[in-house]
Length: 277
Ligand SMILES: NC(=O)c1ccc[n+]([C@@H]2O[C@H](COP(=O)([O-])OP(=O)(O)OC[C@H]3O[C@@H](n4cnc5c(N)ncnc54)[C@H](O)[C@@H]3O)[C@@H](O)[C@H]2O)c1
Image (tube, rainbow, N blue to C red; front, side):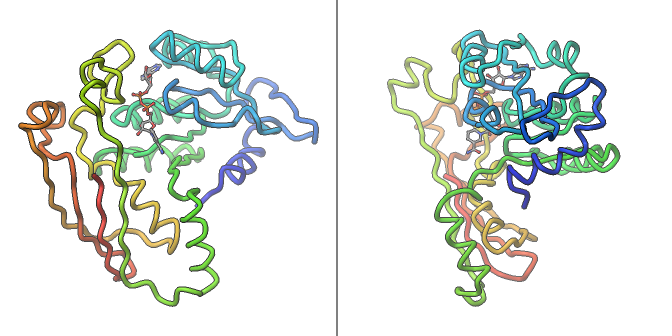
């Protein structure tokens, strides 16, 4: 697992080969020039606070979110679309923080790789095995860096458990229970269209009816982030009440479930019970 600081450190040598002369920080090292795509969760980071990093451009489709990007990163080069940003700025940025909606991550990461830009992407990395292969192939072909911004790894409980595990204090972990329970909506939020399930213009966001197990990373980060094991096999059940939730009656994913449970086996042969509700 690469730390954020490690990621930035590892980009230092690569930045030196970028076409336009990159800025230099007080310690004489090249600064990483990052562009941020997405003014929702994408405004929750601190790249602009790092001495070896600069947010040089940002973009969102919605004006309010462009303003949030401007305010958060103190960056005035804000574009109306990612396409426009790349057309204008691809030659003087080193990396892109991809914080668009989950179904767009692969498309946007590939656009970055195509232009020689490193990527840090919000989770989930992708939604299908085909897209996972495309992502891996592009990353290997270009030799560029790809970092997945999973947050469970940095939760205090996860850090604590990781340290205990690494110190051998748990012995062998043969069974784990992983849970991530996302907040839902109150009636008023549905009526006002102010929850995460709506875009700022009131249209349905990608979250409407999104299958929980297509986004298990916050649960899985709790085992990958402690023992480092990968999941080798999965068997899952789902539950949902379409009478209760309109978004389960019709959605872009043809998904009837709001809650999913899975039994998993790790590559190391251990058992995992994982909930995404
Ligand atoms: N803890 C975590 O790790 C965590 C928490 C929240 C969200 N996320 C992830 O972060 C991502 C963003 O989440 P969100 O809630 O902000 O989603 P969101 O859909 O509210 O925001 C995505 C933004 O991307 C912008 N966008 C999409 N295509 C664009 C384009 N071509 N050009 C410019 N802007 C474009 C949209 O306008 C939108 O504002 C999601 O993938 C989500 O899974 C992770």
